[in-house]
Length: 170
Image (cartoon, one colour):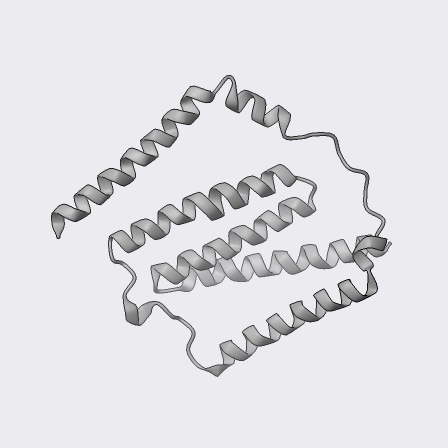
């Protein structure tokens, strides 16, 4: 019962954070801050995947989308000089800072409660599943290795081409 309430609370918490981050991502003027809010949305989605026992999908979400794809987005934004210095921060006024401090204090308080009461170690966790990575990884690195590697080379060539084109303009 304790596990169910703990799980349900955090599922809705990260769901609300993901929705709020996505709305904030769409409403930002600066492309740099919009990309950072998108990263936050992707991390929240990864947490939701992990909570639904899809650990591999959560790890891929962090590694591929929040990691690699967003690095490329930020690289292109900075290469095209879309982020102006005066637009980088969208935090205006003390209200947002107070709200951010309140959220930080709530998360720290939750961590302290969990570590002091040993709630995580006493939860009745569901039984662990068998290895779920092999059915996905085996075809990727055996049957589809060539297309996988060609895609990575294509992305590398596109980045190098973008740098060369940007250097010619300057």
